[in-house]
Image (tube, rainbow, N blue to C red; front, side, top):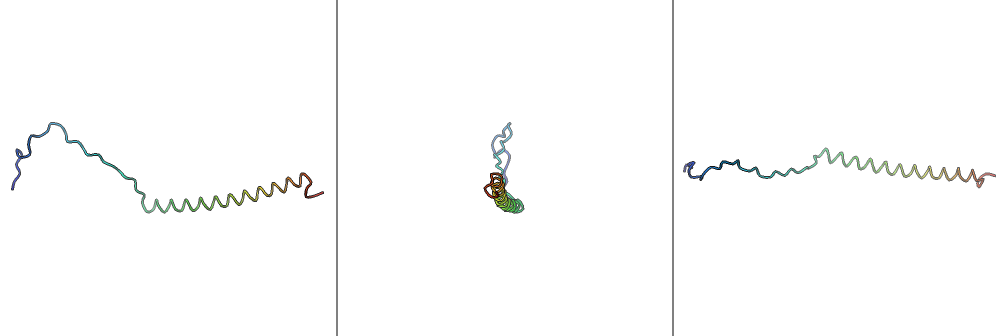
Length: 73
């Protein structure tokens, strides 16, 4: 069966509206891997920073005790 132009009805003088396009930002496998590695490195850094800060705090405490002559006469 052939469809004829007059079977479609009158043509519009306005352009047909474009349906709304929704883009979804989905991370690639590389982006997921980079994110995982960054989180691991950040965790290691946080742990090392905490341990280092603890050592520094203990050292400052020792210095304060020495200055106040609580350790050495």
